[in-house]
Length: 160
Image 1 (cartoon, rainbow, N blue to C red):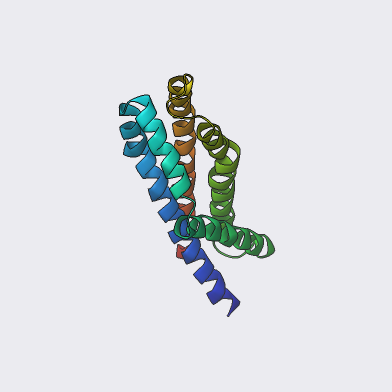
Image 2: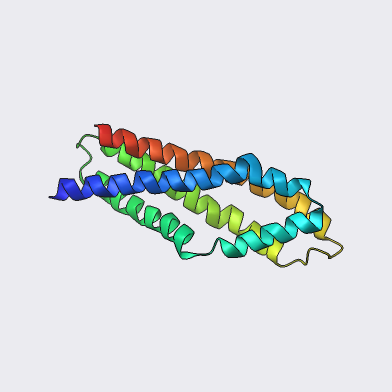
């Protein structure tokens, strides 16, 4: 029974990490480029709106439930280190928790907060927007790679 529950949590974590990776991938590959092509005030206003709308039950539910699944998988793998796939569970959980959740909290959210504090028409807005694009996007690349790698590690754990 415990093995079945662990398998279900691993599947959920793989799917959740994959969904988050896809969301971040979209921002890394075309959303931020499109916003960057707009006049600074328009791009900034659009991103401010996105940052408000993303705080919703669907996105946060997947983002945080995947983090919770990772914590459970990390604990299960630590307790069952010799079991097949335990290393992949630890790797996937670590990648998601550090490369996705921690990077979001430490890097992307503070940038979003700073962006929210400036009106798009303010004199410093164009400079802030340019700096935001140059900082936020590379950190989003990190989150994308981490979430996708976590999904791959969880998938590999299921194959063991």
